[in-house]
Amino acid sequence: MTNMSKQIVFAALFCVTVLLFTGIVAAEPVLLRADSGKNVTEMNATLTTNYFLGKAVKLTAPSQNWKIQEVLVPGTDGWNKTQTELPPARTIALEIRDSDLKLLYHWSDIQLEYFTFPAGFGVARIEVPSVAVNGDFYVVLYERGAVGTLAELDNAKNQSFVFDRSTGNLSPAVLPVRDNRTIPVNWVIWAVGE
Image 1 (tube, helix red, strand yellow):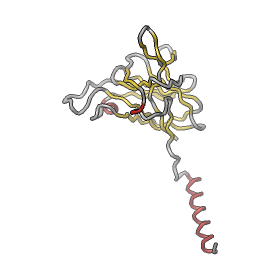
Image 2 (cartoon, rainbow, N blue to C red):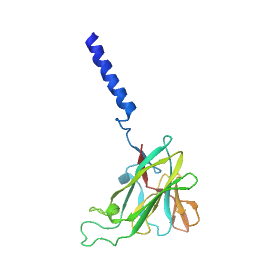
Image 3 (cartoon, rainbow, N blue to C red):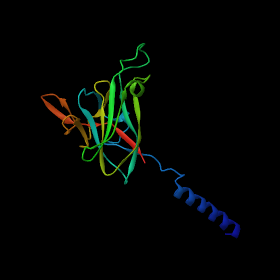
Image 4 (tube, rainbow, N blue to C red):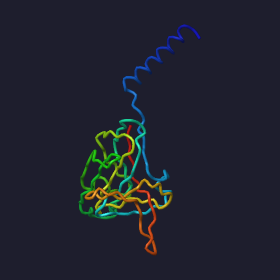
């Protein structure tokens, strides 16, 4: 290797090092899931709604002070482009809670901007103002009957729950089936951050 080649390689390494240490090169966003990890089109899933309780997923931050930037929720409010009138505007809410269920962040809005898709079904993107989490944490969606979201019927991970905000009780996520039985499900709610 010539002297000139060594200088070029050194200069390139120096530039990359400066970029990494100054934060100009951003880390790739990480997607956290509490479901099987399959594409939603391949899941054995059904749309569900809950009027009074929150759908909670337990996730684990991949690093200290990991920052949630958005929450993604596949679902629908029942409208599609063949209909002339939009559905009524209804309030939905989202919370981020720590491992002790202490509230870290609360957001609410109407469903129309997030769950109204021309095709009838899509992925709602709810921005979060970089909430820092450590270890286990919960993302809780209160759709209050305004939207249907996915419950994965196979491969239950025991990381999905129903959260009663008024009592603070967390119960395993299950759906009723025949003969008064229930099956455990995964809520399909994802967190994105870095």
